[in-house]
Length: 252
Image 1 (cartoon, rainbow, N blue to C red):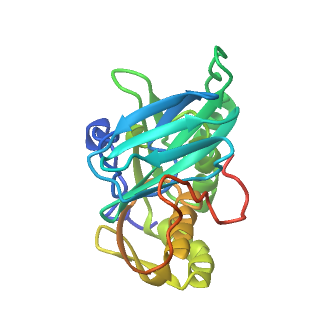
Image 2 (spheres, rainbow, N blue to C red):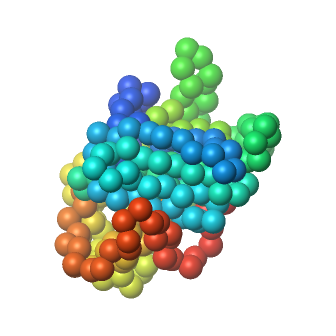
């Protein structure tokens, strides 16, 4: 058996304490934050830096960076769930936005069957609620990775509540699975030292599609070094959300 990758993705609560201030240099499920919105209502968040934001499904919610500030305006449109991609200074984060009717009760916790399946596929997995929420696991093979994906796509965990160690072959297999999609976009990714390097030249649209692809197809958090050269292009009118251009399946 190979030794755990030296650049294992290890996260603790303190490492991501500034989620509301700045997107973090990481990728992959689970989301960084979850926010509940009411249909027709607004919610504001102050960011220390932001280059752009993009909502997966603008029919459910929209996000707008207010002109002259780093304040983010979130607006619920209709009941449902969607994802928000935030990008700043070569880093990105993904938030989950859940929109409900005014006065509706929030959804309950994720099904315990997902955690049970992950425990079976990942020997040694530990999940604790106190003194802090923390899931610890070594991802040794594809079966474990496959079982963790639906668990991390649920409401069970946030990125800051994970401490994951990856065997190197698992990360390489994950990267190989993403290769064809990135190649279609004119980009490539490879591991160097402690993280994943994304590089190439692409349009702004292709760059965003690549970031979405990295997030959707990966498990656990790996530091991302974004070296993509983005070609100049016409941006959507200020204050409008372009939505996710990829016509692939929704994350939920």
